[in-house]
Structure formats: structure tokens, C-alpha cells
Length: 275
Image (tube, rainbow, N blue to C red):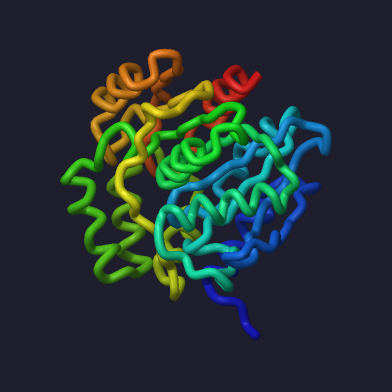
């Protein structure tokens, strides 16, 4: 059986991960979940959730640095493109997503973990941290969407063609508009664009995640030039919502160029925060 263009792009990006990365397929009631595992076996666990279409592979630029101290578990999200397979219990809503993530952590043997998500993955991370606060030591949110503010209307208008008639070309055009001069890695851009062509994708939109209920330490990292939302307003809302939290703006970054843009700054902030 020949590999699809998406599978070829996936394997190309997988080759960017450190040599000792372990590929695990973890059974859950919702299907088998692909997790890229790297770092010392006795390191503090750190679960990484990507944005939509990005797959867990998007953290490849962060893995070498973060994997020196932490045991990284980068996840292909349920319902999205990647090598997580749906099966068993149907995926219907945000409660199913958090139940899946709970089952995944049990399958990985993680009773507690640091949790970090980008964009849609940050929204899911907040949802989960509200559901199971005793299982999350520290929470890091990388340019979170639908947490402190909604999307800009102009961003949604630009994204609409990729939602109504998904294609590689439309996804490429949208990515080029949002990332501008940031120019993320070409292999990852190809994977992201081809994700739109994968049949059967089902991203769950479950409304705003209410961060005010969070009780663990929270770090919010925002993209200076992101177009998904008004960065200054999100930063202000994050500071007011979580007075004990930390907020940092990552210079030169856009929403979709993270976490690839300036990985050293992102890695340094994460490492300082997680301890």
C-alpha cells in the first residue's frame, strides 16, 4: 500500500526528532493514540498538545532542549490529522476530549504531569486542567485560543475557505497570510497544509474555556504578531484572570509559526516556569 502525501510529509518531519525518540500507540476507549516520547526516563513528565493540523510532531524544535530535563510526551490529537486512530467510544464533544486525555495519561502511567498546549491544544489543556486539577502540576499555554478571548473576525474570515473547501493550496495561502515573515520550516508547512486533505477529521469546538477556575501555576506565552486575536487584550485579560499567573510575549512570533519560531526563547521560558 503506497503512502499518502500526508504520510510522506509526516515521516519527513518525524525524522527531525532526536534519534532516541520512542513512538508509542496508547490504547484508550476512543482509539489508539500516537505519542512521541523523548527524554530521560526519570525526568519530570511534560505532555505537549499541538494546535489543530499541526500534529504532535510540531514540537520537534523544542524536544532536544526540553528533553534534557523532562520526559516529553507529544501527542497527536484525537479527531485531528496524524496517527491517532479513532475507534470505540464516539468523539462527540469537549467532555469526550477531556475523557480521552484522562485515559491517555492513565495509559502512559502519568498520575501527575506538567501540561503545555498551543492554540487549540491550549484550549484543551485548560479544559482538562479544570476537569482534573490534581493531575496537572503546572500549566503552560502557548498563544491559547478561546481561553482569554475569542477569534478576531478577520482571522475567521481568512480561515473560512479552508473550512468550507479544504485543500492544500488554501491552507498554504492562509498559513502564508498569518505567518508573514516568520516563515516556519517548509517540511512542517507541507504537513500542516496536507492535514486539511486528510479524510475524517473532526475537531471539536466546545465554546470558551474559563481559565478563572484554574488553581495551579499558569504560564501564558503570546505571539507578538499573532493574527488570531488581539495580543494586548489577551495579555491584559490573562493578567486579570490569573493574578498569580505569568504572561510573556514572544518577540517576532505569529500564532501559527509557534512553537517553531524562536524555540530557544520559548524553551527558556518553559524551563524557568516548570523548574
